[in-house]
Image 1 (cartoon, rainbow, N blue to C red):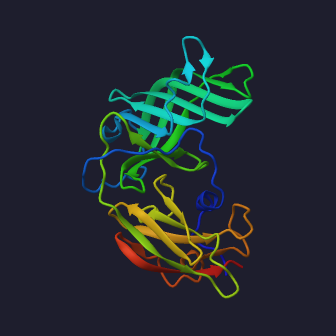
Image 2: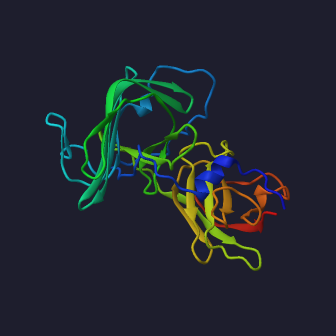
Image 3: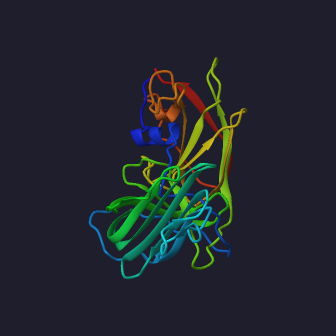
Length: 300
């Protein structure tokens, strides 16, 4: 049975979760609201106008950079964890501060990145062009090294996290790294009603469902390019749950990378709609939905 319809990016995202150095997850805040509007897919052309929905201050991570590094003295203070703050202004400028601190005991390594510049937008892609900034790093308490900041392109989507809280998801343009969520810190973020999708997956005779991942993509994004694409592992019984999704149609895919090589090849397991034997177009599922059934087949 030949593979069909699962693209390279989905395979990489599902089979090998990479560390996204510039992003992390953090909690959001309250305030009731409705369903967030769908994020538009990329369109030709660009604009320097900062989308109103993105303007403000966002943070990802579990610790504030304040207190871990003193820019006036250049002194590091002990810390572990990460914090990334992104400020997006109405005039098209931005400011970014990121701290990544890992290790412990006699060996702690840290990276501090600060930059300011201009942000431009083209559909769901945003380009950051720094006009000033610095990347400082130290390994195991060694000397602090400096590196210049460089332009970067990221894909973005406004969506909700597993708690139903408003989140700004971003990911590198090439899809490397795991997309994670920034949450608002300049004002209370919106919390939406939690509606999700749950179901079960079955494996063919002689195979187990262990290691299977379920992907939920926007129905209008069958290649799963949006950083708001969600993935979930199945339980030992094959059950899966997406606890909070937007009120819009999704396409579900299943994949089991049996040899853990990060790509789909012979011997892997996928859902029937990801093969040339698909009985028709992949059906859309709109939350709330329960008892969704998916069956795995073997890739020849």
